[in-house]
Amino acid sequence: MPSRPVALVTWFSLLNVSGAILAAIPVAFVLVRGTGVRRLALASGIGVVAAVYIVVGGLVEFGVPPGVEGWIVDIAQFFAVSLAVVAMVVLIQGYPLTIGSSDRGPRLR
Image 1 (cartoon, one colour):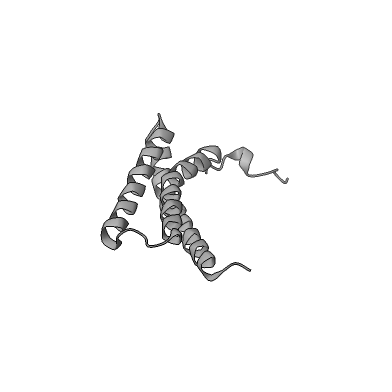
Image 2 (cartoon, one colour):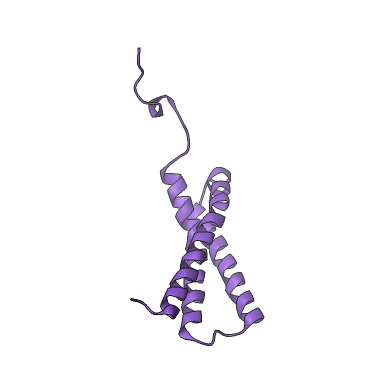
């Protein structure tokens, strides 16, 4: 059975990852629909800038985390925000949301 600090760190890390993925979906749609070249580089840049802003803002407002748990949450949040836009762009590019005649299944006559 994990300890309470481990459970707390896991919970906040999962919340951060989930929030980052949900926030990245509209940004990824705009990148896929609006840009034609270097989407992954642009998505990576957007993610890293947002992650640095969030982590530095948290450090300025709340100070340095007092324990290892705080650092783990900060590092997980940084990577989640940095990679969320890239992951969503890859998913949206791989599975386009168009419905064509071949996507509708067999015709019944």
